[in-house]
Length: 412
View (cartoon, rainbow, N blue to C red):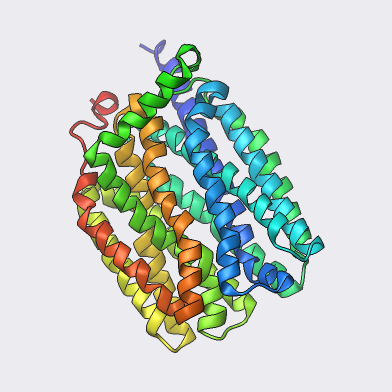
């Protein structure tokens, strides 16, 4: 009776190592983005940009992310999950360091925008890769884990925001700060990636390599005909806009809209991402108990209330309360959408890529749109667009309903 126990124990240890590696990768993704966002006010000052120009510069980050999302399934198929993660993290580091150095050396924003596109490309491809791996680990373990994995992304943003606030307060140059974090991200990725299984959970890479490129493109486009997937994408659009608008603008909205310092702007971003982390840590058990649909609806309501408080309040403490509620309300939309899109493991990569692209449209259109509206009407008033999209996400919530027997294969 004891003979089978050893392999079962070894399998369990491998699953835990796999899960923990994905946790770290999510953390590195959040760290890379938050490192950039936390120093955005300083970069804006170094380059002498107005609000609309900042929005156009961030557009490079979003455009790169869209391209990364599109090619990510091919990275996974050709390189395997380990190779796709290493390539994505390397591009993250190159883009992060390059953006910081170019902003310090060159007075024009063009080169910084190019490196931001590289950062976005790396993070976009990493987004699909780590979510596909996270969904595969979730199915293998038989528990809702994606919200917790996204909590580690938020933990990475918390760490990045705190380091950014400290670097700003200490007067550390942006170029030094971003380069040091880029090196840390790449080296950590090289260490943890060996705990990810070589196999691609959703598709055999050798089979994909033999399939003609035209056929693979047609199969990837076929998922867009699924009306449920499009509604899940609408949820992603609203929730990603709520999250992304804070990532891009909450620091500047605090500085320009609430007349606070750059350091306070970085701290406000920290409040938001701490709240997102708390929401995602608590999200798994809540989702298992209540289900996706009511959780998404309540999340949108809480996020809308927090956003209104942040926009309307004159006091710093209540703005921080609003930022916290905004963060909690935004916390579960993206992981729940990814989890719903990946219910079918055979098409998980293509479906995750599709809904992530829809979500990232918020990141693509959001910066210039909010930047333009902020220039005309004030950045706080521009955030009412986010409120409208949260309402749409709440209305589309039924599309994320769980499929029967999602974990039946592992738990039965």
